[in-house]
Length: 109
Length: 115
Image (tube, each protein chain N blue to C red):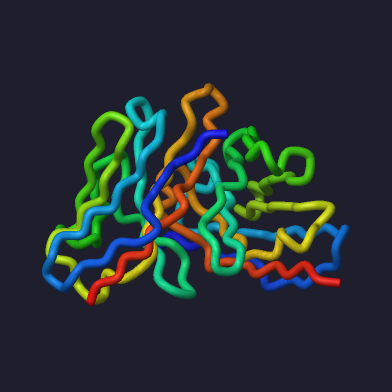
């Protein structure tokens, strides 16, 4: 079955740039979406269709995709950005089944 | 404003079934599908499947095929997810979310499977 691979953890100091990657064979053909989840809360969409930012999401969040890798970048990470981040996409087999990456714990301290 | 409100927590025995509801408001229900996502304790997000609120078409995760059924009631703008033959590893928080961006989420429903 199709898989998306993320690093388990990323750590940065406040004000630094955090980059979280997501790799998958179908990403050249399928969009990546990114979700932030804080402890005990439902996920929140932070990037859709590789690089678009929903209204209300700070400009420091950006996304890009090249080849088989999508990247979420948080420029000038804040303490409040500490959370789990998940990428999401669909397979390209024609089944259109969804899949989440395993998640990345972002630590900002 | 868009809201997805889910039913309350459930405790079930192994082998039983559970049906979770997700009532939508603040948008035209039939214009968007609903996906269901679950999260086991301390684990990541798992996509379970999708249903079109327009025509009822479904697409389920392969590992849940045969055990899960997703339905909608357009008269009440409510989506349902039924999971059968419950096992202990089905213990999780179950979320509904609006397709295709997953831009709105329900509050989650904890389903505990325990003998």
